[in-house]
Image (tube, rainbow, N blue to C red; front, side):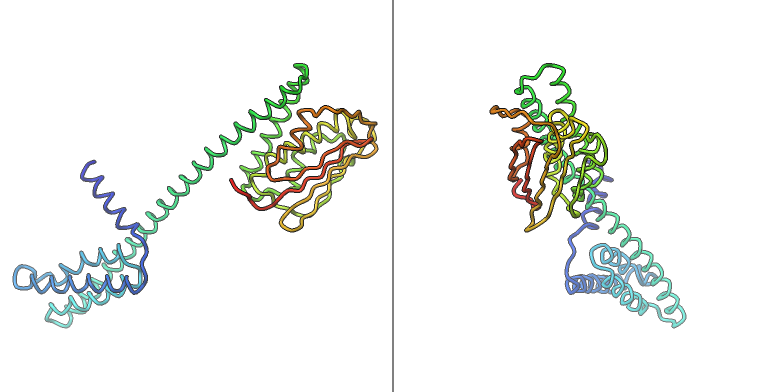
Length: 316
């Protein structure tokens, strides 16, 4: 590390020093003032008779760097007056006080600006550390989710064409959910998620009836809920209410006791063929959302699904 780097590091350490109480700042400023005054007395009998503020300026810089603005202002005023006592004529003393006060004000203002800039830099560095950690965590989660999607899709034993369609659709739903999280982190509404996920699947607007209050979803629930809604929608397209010209899907939700309950109901669709075997899509619907209680079953005219989803984070 070069001398310049060391000096820069030392300056940053001083300028980003932890904030103290106002009493501590005034005590430190008083100590610096005392050192400056005693130092001025010590050099008074040598070369400094024509330099009344020679020891007050360095202490002003330290005070401005280490103390709060009120303490710096008080130090500057006190040192402006005290230093002038080494000047014998009244007019020169007034001029010295004015000039020193102007210089002191500039030093304090510039130092306050530097302190604020360094604190912002430090805060942004801390924010970047948190963001990078969250990004790495999110990438790991996405890879795990994608792996689970692929695994469950392969377990279905579908032919290559159907498998490709299922995988493409599920991964697309995953991508849409992540886009919502990125564009509006922490404030994604349930209605927005429903619209992004299901509107492209519905044969017509009047065949998807959506109703519910404004609900803001926790980030961890958005991705998996979008996958479940997509799975319900594609099943409706392939086998349920959206597979003919009349069926309608009703999706309503209500919020209560820090929980949201979603109810999916298909009406007027074709008769549904039931199977004792639980497919990959059905397993995804029932188990994909952590901490959610899901009741999924098939009626004659389509699927019914109730999802009770906590709105507060539960663990990591």
